[in-house]
Length: 335
Image (cartoon, rainbow, N blue to C red; front, side, top):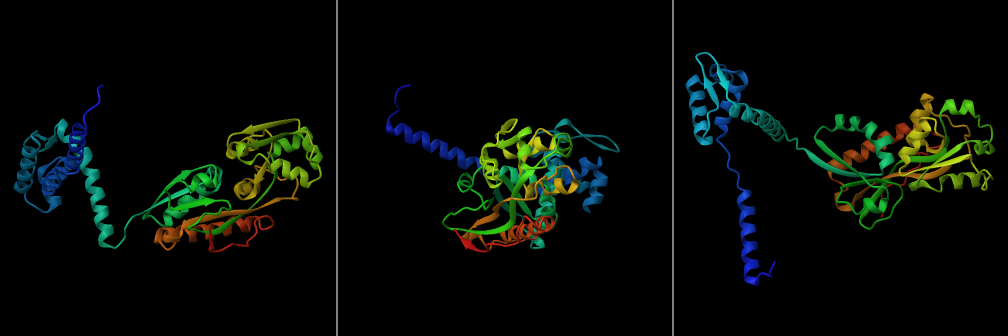
């Protein structure tokens, strides 16, 4: 394609801008006409629609006639007793009803001083799947006006590059962000109880008869633990690596092998007997999980609500395994 002259580029740009601005201007039908149509179509009768709206039959009929003129299509097949929507009428009703419902909910919230707040949260994938999402319904019940959007990233560095309001991660440092620990963490070998019965683990050396499960994101967990128990050269029967740690946890639940389980994330399965911990010590203690927010947003109501809920919910998890999940907290540290 030949190069355009500079003047031609300016003309094209102007045309695009004008088109964009034109798209922003909504051509909406009269709201009263939409209300009359929606009531009559939903109830199948102009008379019943008029009763619901508190107006006369004639008023509903005039509003619907005006709407048909505005749209240029017929919305009802008139009969003596009923108002049967045409195909165009049914299509409009499908959209108009929910739209009026949303408008009514929004108006109620504004009238009562309740405004929906959007909160964008980034979390580590395994933490999100194993701890955060299973408990999220409790937060939503307590805060129905907060629209929480969750995204995941495998490292804290990736999370801090996202356009989010809150980050849930391990220890990290970032200028302009405030961090607070809400949940402890420690890691120990865990496995399916049926596998434990088939191949008992009486001492760490017995791991040589098992498959050790790894993930790319926590590749050194087994190496560190085996060094702690004095077996840095132990050779397992097999090793299996997964892209994400939640795959390794699921593999352990299904009896594929032994995983270095994060107690905060598999604690419920341990309490339920779906996983067992053959060696109560030594545990690989970690600093736990933190909530990070930009300093400028730290006092935002939605952020404060999430922070308080995390602290409260984290204490419940810690109380289930106090030996491993220390209650010590690093509060308000500036990153």
